[in-house]
Image 1 (cartoon, rainbow, N blue to C red):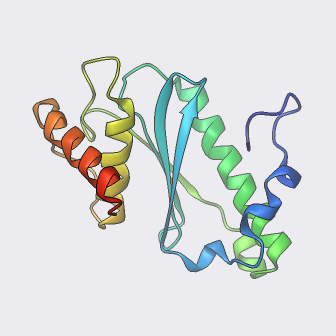
Image 2 (image 1 turned 90 degrees about the vertical axis):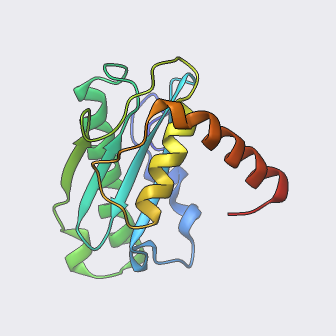
Length: 157
């Protein structure tokens, strides 16, 4: 919703998402991103490091322009959120470091249908505190697909 209006960014339409919540009290924020209803990528907000990270499992699918535009919009959202929720002037003026992770630091998918699994795996690794380079291989994706299905069926994190 941050990027879907014809006029561009619309904070008012997402302002209520965090009513009575201070998102800056989290160490990480994991933001799955669906690109044009055909591809999943990931943005991670590392609050402690003041870093915005972009992960994309298909080389060349999202241009550098897209990744940087997306990170700029997330940064703008964070500034507006800090101002709106009055969490401190320091958070409203923070300049976030942008990091676009690419090959060889993250593995790339070799098919056209595993982007969601890669996005979930990137999210899980970052949530566990791991940093790129990530060293899993496409051959492990089948096992990961089964693990995700079992977690969903058993409603486990």
